[in-house]
Length: 297
Image (cartoon, rainbow, N blue to C red):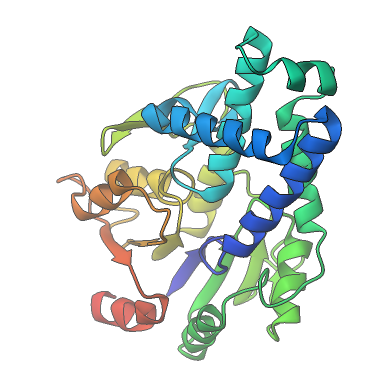
């Protein structure tokens, strides 16, 4: 069996990295603007509350379109709030003058990207490498002669370094595309092209015009895909299975449920399209994965 795994949030717990990025962002904004910490925190709260009213409008964007929604991931929640603060500051919303005057041409999103890079530069430790239970599950699957491909938007070298820190040794797909445990980095699952392909899932219109990720799925033809962000990880393989049932008739799709997983994504997994041959399942406990795959394989 060939299994495609997402990395961040699926094989790792992003809570610590999220907290680290948020603390760094707060420091950068306050330093750049001269605004007290408590003032920034209050504006962050307001922006997050605003985003929650229409979450389908905000998130990870590409080509001017939402690629993944702000309520699907902790980092997207932060980025969306910073997008809104940039909008409010640009519009001259009352109370944002101090940010605009102090930061000049520097945007909230500029500082968000810097904080994200700083977070990724932190030394490797138990908080930013794969969960012990994820490592155990991967080893169990490898012992069963499964083929594991970790598909990440990050560089393969970063993912390999994190696995090696945890005691496992995958290889870069580009160096050995037939290896049984390999990393496919820079996957561009969030990258949209110029031909919008909106499909409704749980009341959300998810754009599936993702040629990079589609190419990977077409090349690998996995029997299972495991991810924690529905729009990025699972929407496209689900629709490919629906459109090409003879090719993907035995595909299993697993959504790793996290505290931040939105209800609409859960509903999508519980109520799949009637013409979709793929099996959709919620993964509430990651160590259940081998038995679930064995049962439904």
